[in-house]
Length: 284
Image (tube, rainbow, N blue to C red; front, side, top):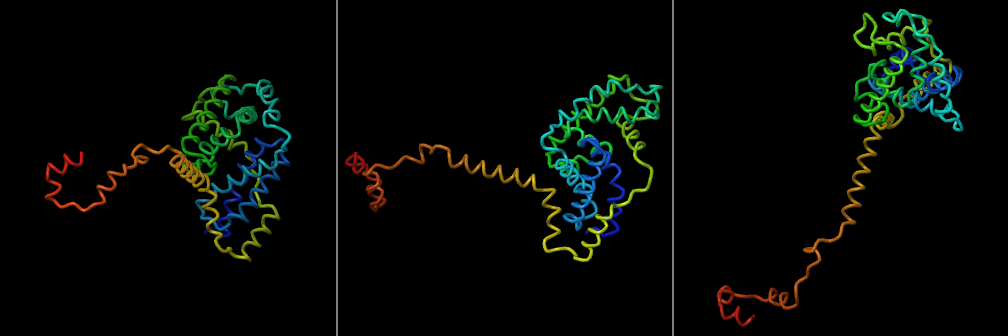
């Protein structure tokens, strides 16, 4: 179980990157800030008793839920990002191209390119490359299988590299990979001022500390991270039961003995009688 200091310290360190993630999904900064506050509150109230290693996974799950609720239901993501290709085309290419991560145009260019990715592909890419999640952690956080996560991460990575190549950007000098350069630009674009928890979140921390952990509260983080595999296992079991009950009966299951055979098997026969050939002829 994470202590109050561990929980608050993690939330403070995770909030800058989480705000940037929310700004990629939501239309304005104020809405993104509200979604971030809601994600912090959900993490404190629902998963405050989680282990420290579970906090990043649960916080990302709560952030995704808060962003989905903050997005207006009558506005589709495609309509919200309709101007993103035009914005990307209008942005100037950072110069010099060999050192483009250090230019002032790079953050806006990376932001516009990330905004063009589907939500699931973008989240998978950011979790794996920017936040440093392992494949298992990212899959648990996004409630996906390992194969589905790899597919979304590959699609997001390929699309992002293609968009940057269309702007004439390639692997810059001094970086081992293009993903490392992208993550360096994203980290440099974060605000440098000290991050603090909102007052409502501090009040929630105080209330949780006074109340103490509720009964079976420690089971909730585990269920949140493993609910999707449990659902898949239950669905597979139900499907197998339905298939087994709906299959037609096999011939050996429906075959019945004739009355003569049944009467013959019901009688008691001695060994000498069974070995007598005449009995077999008479019976035939």
